[in-house]
Length: 248
Image (cartoon, rainbow, N blue to C red; front, side, top):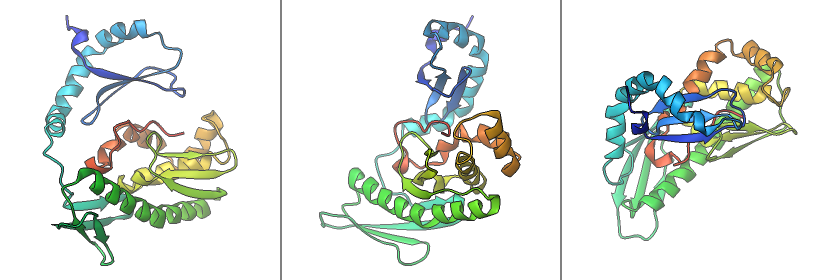
């Protein structure tokens, strides 16, 4: 019999979860998502029942996970790829004695960074600002185009580097989008935007909400499954330590 206590995992309580869900990814390893009402004493039983599947899934991601855990010391990325808008940037870094980092990306597809490029905190902050600027440039345009195409209107859009949501919609029709959506393949980013636009009509996950989502995104079930591992598209320098939760 498999010793289920040998499995390292993180437990996440989701107010939207209806059933227990097991997720395995290179970044997070085994993650167990449970509803609020779940009795944690049942975890050993769940782990035992799914032990064969867990072992196969962990073995599948083991090479990538070991590579991540043994990641080399900090260095700026060579390239930044925004799959959602089919853009790629080459990053050229030059270490100088300056106290601050400077960035120049006026030339299409090329980013020049100078200063203390070995400083991880400064570099992450600089690249994070670049990410938000690009997200503010592209994501609202995509949202506006989808709004016109679907006939679903919203009041305003904002961009944030959210730690726990890909997107959200308020009761007043204000949509907030995670800047990291730029890293996702275009079909997944489109799905997130459609998902949030549908919340302007149904601020819940009722059957009517999902029917509206299906009207504008017929393959939404496939997209929902892919979104479980979507954070794997986010590079190390932009990846939050906290997992991004399912869509709100």
